[in-house]
Length: 417
Ligand code: PLP
Image 1 (spheres, rainbow, N blue to C red):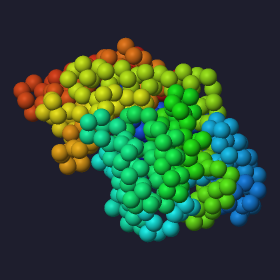
Image 2 (cartoon, rainbow, N blue to C red; image 1 turned 135 degrees about the vertical axis):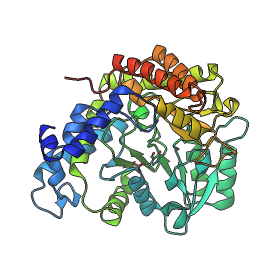
Image 3 (tube, rainbow, N blue to C red; image 1 turned 90 degrees about the vertical axis):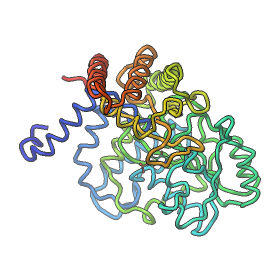
Image 4 (cartoon, rainbow, N blue to C red; image 1 turned 120 degrees about the horizontal axis):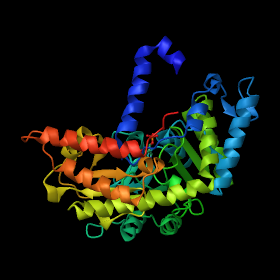
C-alpha cells in the first residue's frame, strides 16, 4: 500500500476511504461480502500479468506452468466442494457465466423460461435491455400473489404452452428455497435444459446451509463474490457430457484471456469455503437473516413471503408510507448500506420501489449474531422513519450513524493490524 500511496495518492485515498466506509458502517447489500486478506493477496498478485488463453495444458501462450497449476487446483477444489463433474472458473462475472451458458445450450431466437425481473429474476434472465431479452425469446414466471412463493404449477403450465429450450431458476431477490427437483421434472417433461443461476446462494450451498442444485441442474452458474466470499467473478459447474460445450462457450466464444489472478483468488476462496468454520458462518448467515427479518417485522415492516430461508430478506415498506428509494437514502445517511428493491406486484416504478432488500453475509463475516441483528433492525426502522427534511431529521440520522459506528467498531471489518 505504501507503493500505491507514493505513486498515486489519489487512488490510495479512494482505497483508504472505502476501507473507512466498510469499517464505519453496516453493509447489508445481499450480494456483497468482505473477502479475506488471503483472497485479496491473490487478487493483488503478479498473476494479473499472465496471458493464458485456453485451458490448463492447452494454452495459446508460453510460460503458463504456474497459472496452469492455479487453475487445476481451483477446478479440483470446485469439483470436490460442490460434488460436480466439471467446473469452469474463467467467467469474468456472473453475467459472463450466464452468457456462456446461453451460448452453450440455446440458439438465438430460442424460448427461455425464467423468473420475471420484477419478481426477483436477474437482468440476464430475459430483460429487454440485456442480451438475454434481445437475442432470445424470454417467457417469465412469477410468484403467487397470496404466498409470494414461486408458483410451480404456473411454471409447468408456461413450459407446456411455450416449450422452452432452457428453463432458468435462481434469482436476485427471492428469499426462499427453490425446489430444484420440481424444476427438473418440469424441464424433463418439455425436454428443456435446466440452468440454475445460483449466484446469490451458492455460498450457502458450499457451507451446507441449504440444499444443492448440482444433482438436478444441467448447468449451474454463479458469482464467486456473494455469500461465497471470494473475488468478484463467475463460475460454471456442469455434467461431464456438457463440459466441452461450456468450455468452448466461455473461451473462445464469449471471452478472451482469463484473469488468472482472479482464478487463483477463486481457488483460495474455495479452500476457505471447505473449512468447518465456513459451515458455521453459512448457518449463521441464515440465522441472522431470519432474525433481521423478524426484527423488521416487529417494527411494522413486512418481510415478503413472511420471512426467509436464505441470506436475504425482501421488506415491503408500504405500511410505513416510505418508498424504497427514500428508505435507501435515509439509511445511507445513517451509514447503513442497503438497496431499494421492487416487491412482487409492486405499484411503484423500479427506481422508486416499495421495498428494500437486506442481506447478512457481510455483517456475519464481521462476527455479528442474532442479538446484533435485533439492534440492526431497530436502527434500520428508525432511519427509515426519519425524514431528513423534517425539523431535527438530519440530526436524528447523524445520531443513528453514531450508534452504527459504535456497533461496527465492536465487530470491525478488516481489523487493524
Ligand atoms: N445472476 C444473479 C442471480 C445475480 O444476482 C447477479 C448479480 O447480482 C448476476 C447473475 C450477475 O453477476 P455479475 O454482477 O457478477 O455480472
